[in-house]
Structures are given as C-alpha cells and as structure tokens.
Image (cartoon, rainbow, N blue to C red; front, top):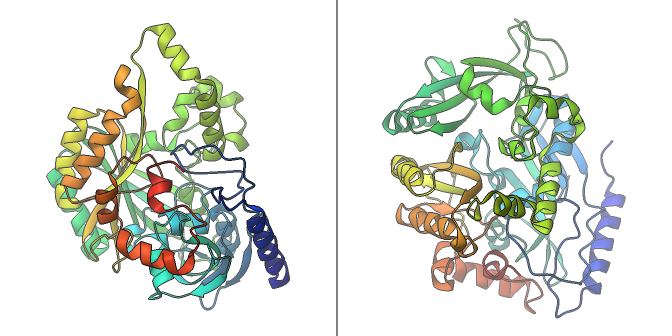
Length: 464
C-alpha cells in the first residue's frame, strides 16, 4: 500500500515546521542520512529540513502508466513498487539511494537516456517547497518547473512528483560489443540513436565502458521475456529459458562487460548492476578481492555503504596517511560526470588519456528532448556522458585540483557541459553563462525573495 494523502500532508507539515526553525542567517539544508554529492560543504550547526515524511510512493497507476511519488523517495523504493506491474520509470539512475527529487534537481542519467533524456524530462507535474515556504504545484512550461533541473536546492525542494512509466519485460538481454577506435564508437552511437537497433536487434538501453585506449565496449540492452514464447504480465511472472547472471555475489559486473559477449539479467538486477560495486569503485575498499568479497555481507555491497566508508576516509585521512608512509605523491580526487557532443568524444578521450590517465571510464549517450535553461543541452543533439571516479597521484599541487580544473576547461572548449554534483571551479561570469544564471536569478527572486536558500554558485563552487 502506498503513502496516504493524510500522511503526505503530515510530512509537509513537519517540513514547514523544520524550515521555520532554521535561523535566517544559516544555510538551509536537508536532514538526510544518505547523499550522492561529491563536493565538500562548509560546516553548519543549523537544523536540517525534516523530510522523513516524504520518502514513499503515493500511487502507481498501471493503466495510465504513471506514478505519484514523494520527493525523497529513492529509486530503489520506486522500482520495487512499479516492477510488479511490469513498469519502470523512463530513466532509472544507476545508484539505489538517488531520490526522485535529487535526480530532477541534480540531474540523473542512465542507459535509457538516449531515448528519454534525463529524469526530469519524464516529470508530468511537481510540487516544490520554495524558499518562501510555499508548496507550489508546477507543470512543464512554468518558469519554476523549467528552472528546477540542475538547481540543486537553490529554488527549493521537490515534495511530490508525477512521472511517466514505460512497460518493461522481466529480463534484459545484453550484448557487449567491442570497438577499437573512437570513429567506430561514434558511428555506432549515432546509428543506435537514429534506429534504436544494432545488427538487426532492438536496443532499449545503451551504455559503455572504455577500459583502455583502443579497448572500448558498448553494451546494447533489450527487454525480453527471457526466451519464452508468451510475454508474462509482470517481471515476476515466469522464469527465463536461459540462466541469468547474478552480480550481487562473487562476480563483478564491469568485468563481465569486457570478458563476455552476451549476458542475461533480471530487469531488477539490470537496473542496479552498477550499484553493487559502485561501478568499479568498490575495489578501493578491497570488496572485489575474492576472499574479502566472501566475507563482505551481500547486504553491504551497495553504493551508499561505500559512500559512507569514503566519508570516513576523508575525515580520518586514511588514504593520505598510507600514501605518505609508502612515499607516493599526494592524491587529487577526480570524480566528475561530463556531457560531450558525440562528434567531440574522441578528442576528449584522447586528451583525457594524456592529461589524466584514469581508467576505466563510463560512457552513456543522452539526447535532450527540449531546452532546459539551467543545463542547456541542445535538443536532439547526441551527447555522451563520460563518468570517471577515482584519484590521481599529482603531488603537492593536489590541493589546487589541477586535473579537475583542466577537465573543466577542456569540456568547455569542446562545447560540453559538466554536472555539478562534484567540485566545480568556474569564475562567477563563466558559471552564470553556462548554467542559465540570469534566468535562474529571476526565478529565484520570485520564489525565494528573502534569499533563504543559497544560490547555485554558492552551492556548487563556494561550497556553502
């Protein structure tokens, strides 16, 4: 059973009460137990916003293919509610604890983004708790609605969203296809975006991994009944004709992308294929070592656990101490997602190899369906998200973030865009130009006239 409207109203009331308790000279923040942000923030003793009553699913309508969801509901929770109906959100970000409101205000992406764009493009209506303390219902075309994506809380927080769903079958058939050069990669991405097919088979989802220069894999995924003749009514209705892989156990998904040509997963396991090992970043904690993995509880093989461990390392400086003891240069943390036009992807990857040298990196094609002022991807143009998450030994200059600053500049030169969930270093003028600053300021002045919420620049660059 979903959350009742009465319970939702109570959650809104607690949110309002907690907002009233925040001193006017203190930043307004959410009081959340989990986060998928990778940028540090200045310390604050102010109480956070109470969103504990806004974490559920209100309703799933399998006939209209829509879901009404509270803003702090995680995609993990939502998927558990939609899959029994044979439905899923149009875009499901790759980490379980990403919330609906977070994916809309902070931009999410996944392997269906070449068909459906980013998560906010499947939102039909949305309630926003604004800096003025109001809860406003907004629709596509409204200034508040259109400026909300990539606003990261500077306009307010989503409390309720109505989103579109699509049909999905119980299993996902994968083909991992190798490409030896960037020209072939670009051609393949363009073909799949244009035709929704590869080598005569439908493609419902597409992403990829660059393991090394000249060692590229694109994964083409197709929803399937698992090889049975009659499609089932829900993803739990039948078993496949072939065995499915399980990457929540001893096997690691990203290695299979390189080592296998084909695969079959349940749709549930496909949606969370990257979460179990936080893509490949669980290796930093030893979780991919066969002995450690046997001892590591399965319920703790998930991204939010690794994120908390990373936070512990940052507080105690464990990795830095080990590096100093071993005589290794100081590390710079390089955690970014950038969108690069597909025709400039090869240039970026060549430059990245020379100047950063981090491997592997994730590739996810995306096509925006219409303009969005605060993250202005050109509608209909093919971009490829390049994700890279790790550290680089750079030496004493690490504190100045030279690799991150260089990446920022190179993406700008190539006509791309950078997500703001991690560190950013733009000067104010460049930032305002890249992220719709004039328009965002007008919307903010209307819905946060007293400036209770930090600006986007304050959040993303000055770490407020």
